[in-house]
Image 1 (cartoon, one colour):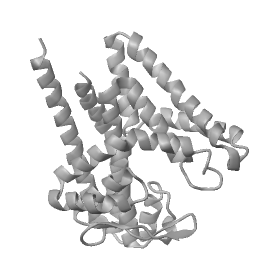
Image 2 (cartoon, rainbow, N blue to C red):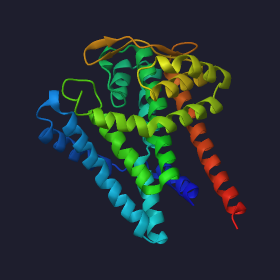
Image 3 (cartoon, one colour):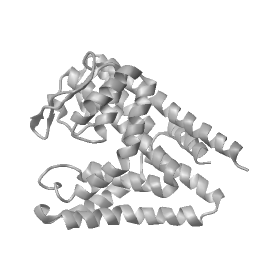
Image 4 (cartoon, helix red, strand yellow):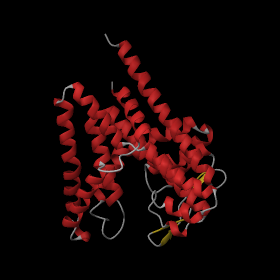
Length: 307
């Protein structure tokens, strides 16, 4: 049944996209911001406080999800699961934000493309040229595909409502606190480690999906040779395999928080351009279709084989 609920959640996202107002993750982010401001008074000694904050903000929603999973009847639980999974994923939103970068970039409107890519990435977009904008948007599609789409599907299929809630809460906290800055270096460490742990398997399954849905040999080669060079243990496989699947070069230098950071080059081939962003969206759609096909096929085979 879980596989069919995934299909319904994806169809709901395709039809409606993200809610414009009152998104639960926005509310959750407001709680996280308020709690961090109140508790993170000593950034140089805040690791223990960060642990408690992460435990509270992740554990609370998970306990509610466990209660719903155990006690709600199927006729109430199934719609709730579809609703939560729809809210946890964002394939249509990612598609719209990426196209908002690709269209002005194709038209030669670099300032508009910079403004649009600033909605996707944390780097300093004002310093990016056309290649930098296209690289940033493509990397965001590949990585957010893993974080915001496939990891949610994985944890829902594995652990139902509590699984997807735990992952989404941890991932949101990592996005807010998981920075190696003076304020968050210690406070956000637990959230970052938890997010790394929950994304370890989904990231590699995402990378495998990109391999199967793109230039397979090149993607496998890039994954094997380049993934370990990236600073993130989960983004490395996803980005290297995705860049190879697209046949482009990503990574390289980029400005972050006023400093130029030299990153390894991932993939192989020409530099990213506007068309690369659209190609990454096609790769993401094919990979999503593959996940749903495998999930539904497995569900059908299990139901046929059961007594």
